Amino acid sequence: MAVNIVMGPPCSGKSTFIKNTFPDSKVIDLFDFQKDKSFVTVESVMESYIETKDALVAALKENKNVVLEHTLLRAIRREMYVKAIREVTDEPINIYVLIPEKATFIEFSKQRKCPTDDRYFMDLFGTLEIPTQEEGFANVYVIMPRI
Image 1 (cartoon, rainbow, N blue to C red):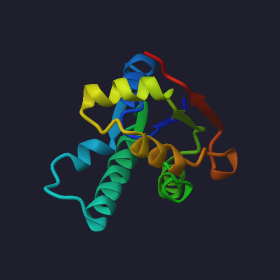
Image 2 (tube, rainbow, N blue to C red; image 1 turned 120 degrees about the vertical axis):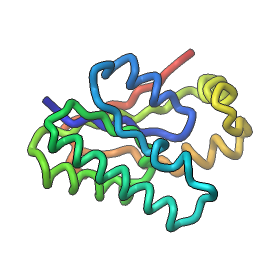
Image 3 (cartoon, one colour; image 1 turned 180 degrees about the vertical axis):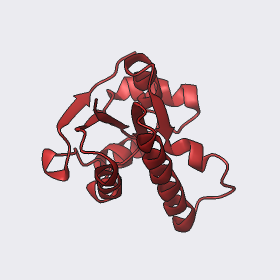
Image 4 (cartoon, one colour; image 1 turned 135 degrees about the vertical axis):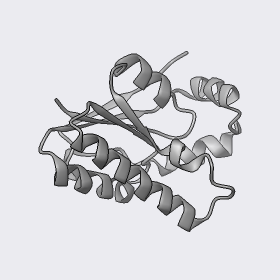
C-alpha cells in the first residue's frame, strides 16, 4: 500500500486522473474544504489546508486507500502533508504532478469555467515547483494529460 498525492494547478485534470487511476480510493480533495467559503483570504486558505490535512490523517488512521487531491504548487505547502502522513504511517508516499499541454489546459478550463488567458496559464505553471524525493516522496510521476 502507498499514500498517493495528485497535484497540479486548477483545471489540470486531477479529478479525472484520480477517477481513472484510483477508482477505489477515498479522495481527500482540497476543493471540498474551500468550495463553501464565502470569500478567499489567507486565513481561509490556511484553514482549508489544515482541514484537508486533518481529513487525510483521519482516513489514513482508518487504514483506507487514500488519495490527496491538492494544488500544492510550492514545496513549502507540501511539507505539512508529508509530516502529517509520516506521523500516521511509514507507507511510501507517491506524488503525481499533472502538467497538461496548453491546449488541454484550455479545454479543461472551459469545462470548469476557469480563466483561459495566457497570463493565468503562465502564472500557474510558473509557480509550480516539481516535487523531489528529498521532500519525502518515494516516487515522483509527471503526468501530461491530453484531451
